Image 1 (tube, helix red, strand yellow):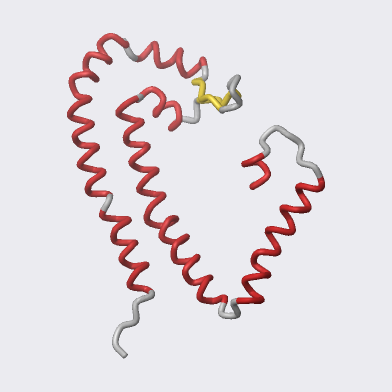
Image 2 (cartoon, rainbow, N blue to C red):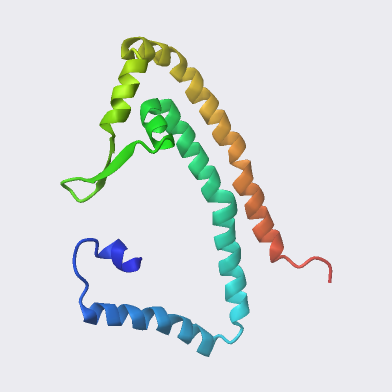
Length: 157
């Protein structure tokens, strides 16, 4: 995965791959040799990772999805129905393209002029509701952060 992140289209040389393998096995080995209480590190790493996976990422995905439904309802519907294709752009960044069959069905159902006018009137209301949702959903990661903090605070003696 790390190789794909830094070397997307290039072939990685065996020398670079060997160095990456040494780093990925050497760093934990050094921690284990010089800091023998590795359970402390694992506890903090597990708590932070769990916090992100359980409390932060689901809220971010939900809010991003909600905003996409407001800003581009056609794209949101295409993603819901898996009617899109990912194409490689000229600058090596992927581009989302809607399938022609989906666009044809959408054009039959929706008169875009009326839909845009109706959408323009309610877009401010939807964005206002979205900002309120952002405010309310921000309490979920805050709750998770408090759980992480109080997990490591000794209570009592």
